[in-house]
Length: 339
Ligand code: PHE
Image (cartoon, rainbow, N blue to C red; front, top):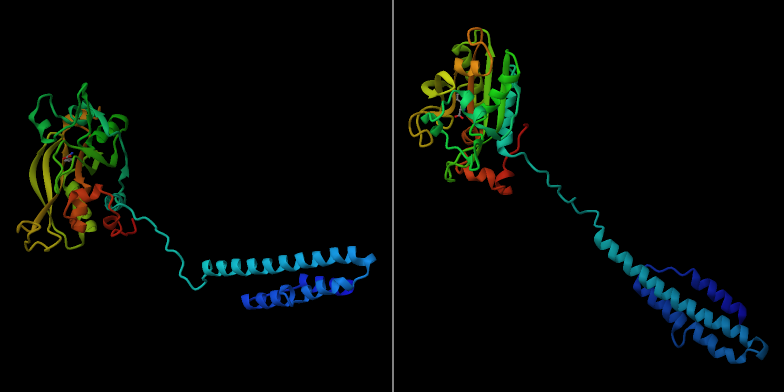
């Protein structure tokens, strides 16, 4: 009897099962009323008195081990099938959401890239500025009505502090510090006190440019801007310069490009003129150079400034300016580019 029990212990410890059916038949074989272990319990009464104690312990042990083994096999099988559900090797991988660059960053980077190819580098400055850098140094006399051209956010407690209305303030910072030649771009966010609508916002983005050296001419300005327009909007793009006014440039001009939607034939976008305005420009006023300690008899220069939103609208026909600051991923997801 002892040998039988030991043999069964051995057999049970080696049991394997891959199906619930197999486990059930093992349970019937060992643990049911007519199973092998019950039979042994029945035979137990024939065991001699001296052996009863030892054999009894072995039998109980056998019964527990068998029960334990069956339970273990069941557990193993159910956890394996749970794992199988998670591990479907035929499933496609979870797509990784890679963000896209903001359209304004794309276009800003493209503008920078185009001008950097003709030698322009970048400078940045603070968005909270003083009156001197935003207006006075740029030849806006105090109380001059030209200050109204740009609806300024002033700080109530100190009217000397403003949110910059253009990045021309950075031109002043650079000219104060650096001797010509200067060939730089000034990208950044600017603020104007305008009611928010589909066509105006209280903040927007600019890239301005400045080139100062000996004998810089208006012809060079025109050439640089024509190069930019063709790089940005295509080889067939035409430009035209209209006389304009800015306190810090003389002469001043506004530049139009042939409408990139209709190719200049006239459409609703260009109000049937064939032209759309893209930037302001001009020769740096000698007063501005002198304000920054640059000798206007030796040096001359040109400057230009454009709104990044405007260029982006022309490139991508974004109809509502507010979309740029709403962070709607359905809008942002549409912009993919090398920049
Ligand atoms: N600073 C001007 C603006 O914000 C743009 C400009 C820059 C015009 C440089 C001429 C020269 O409107």
